[in-house]
Image (cartoon, rainbow, N blue to C red; front, side, top):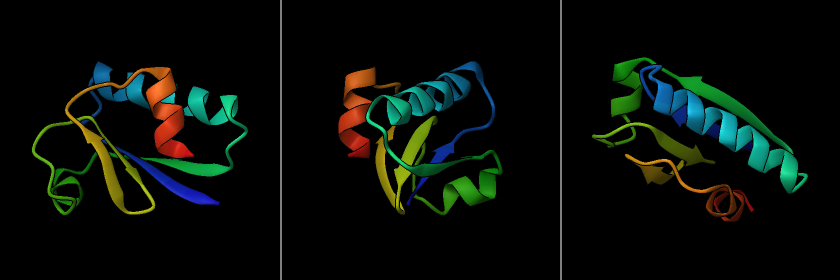
Length: 77
Protein backbone atom coordinates (compact mmCIF):
# COMPACT_ATOMS: atom_id res chain seq x y z
CA UNK A 1 0.00 0.00 0.00
CA UNK A 2 1.32 3.40 -0.98
CA UNK A 3 1.32 6.44 1.28
CA UNK A 4 -0.17 9.55 -0.32
CA UNK A 5 -0.16 12.96 1.31
CA UNK A 6 -1.93 16.15 0.33
CA UNK A 7 -0.05 19.17 1.67
CA UNK A 8 -1.97 22.39 2.17
CA UNK A 9 -3.47 24.74 4.69
CA UNK A 10 -7.05 23.67 4.06
CA UNK A 11 -7.96 26.07 1.26
CA UNK A 12 -10.50 25.08 -1.43
CA UNK A 13 -7.70 24.11 -3.85
CA UNK A 14 -6.23 21.77 -1.24
CA UNK A 15 -9.61 20.13 -0.72
CA UNK A 16 -10.12 19.81 -4.47
CA UNK A 17 -6.75 18.06 -4.83
CA UNK A 18 -7.70 15.71 -1.98
CA UNK A 19 -11.05 14.87 -3.62
CA UNK A 20 -9.49 14.38 -7.07
CA UNK A 21 -6.76 12.17 -5.63
CA UNK A 22 -9.37 9.93 -4.00
CA UNK A 23 -11.27 9.74 -7.27
CA UNK A 24 -8.10 8.94 -9.24
CA UNK A 25 -7.12 6.20 -6.78
CA UNK A 26 -10.57 4.62 -7.05
CA UNK A 27 -10.49 4.92 -10.86
CA UNK A 28 -7.32 2.84 -11.19
CA UNK A 29 -8.13 0.50 -8.29
CA UNK A 30 -5.11 1.86 -6.42
CA UNK A 31 -4.72 0.83 -2.80
CA UNK A 32 -3.39 3.72 -0.77
CA UNK A 33 -3.74 5.69 2.40
CA UNK A 34 -4.44 9.38 1.71
CA UNK A 35 -3.52 11.82 4.45
CA UNK A 36 -4.01 15.58 4.66
CA UNK A 37 -1.13 17.58 6.14
CA UNK A 38 -2.16 21.10 7.17
CA UNK A 39 0.62 21.95 9.65
CA UNK A 40 2.87 24.55 7.99
CA UNK A 41 6.00 23.30 9.76
CA UNK A 42 5.40 19.75 8.53
CA UNK A 43 4.67 21.04 5.02
CA UNK A 44 7.96 22.97 5.00
CA UNK A 45 9.93 19.76 5.62
CA UNK A 46 9.05 18.72 2.06
CA UNK A 47 10.76 21.81 0.61
CA UNK A 48 7.71 23.16 -1.18
CA UNK A 49 6.82 26.83 -1.27
CA UNK A 50 3.39 26.71 -2.91
CA UNK A 51 0.43 24.54 -1.97
CA UNK A 52 -1.42 22.38 -2.66
CA UNK A 53 1.12 19.61 -3.16
CA UNK A 54 0.91 15.88 -3.72
CA UNK A 55 3.45 13.54 -2.11
CA UNK A 56 3.56 9.84 -3.00
CA UNK A 57 5.78 7.60 -0.88
CA UNK A 58 7.79 10.59 0.35
CA UNK A 59 8.38 12.13 -3.09
CA UNK A 60 6.78 15.42 -4.12
CA UNK A 61 4.95 14.79 -7.38
CA UNK A 62 3.38 18.21 -7.92
CA UNK A 63 3.16 21.54 -6.15
CA UNK A 64 1.23 24.76 -6.70
CA UNK A 65 -1.42 23.49 -9.07
CA UNK A 66 -4.19 20.97 -9.42
CA UNK A 67 -3.47 18.35 -12.07
CA UNK A 68 -6.13 16.75 -14.22
CA UNK A 69 -7.65 13.44 -13.21
CA UNK A 70 -5.61 11.62 -15.87
CA UNK A 71 -2.38 13.27 -14.68
CA UNK A 72 -3.16 12.18 -11.13
CA UNK A 73 -3.76 8.61 -12.23
CA UNK A 74 -0.31 8.56 -13.87
CA UNK A 75 1.33 10.03 -10.75
CA UNK A 76 -0.24 7.39 -8.54
CA UNK A 77 0.55 4.38 -10.71
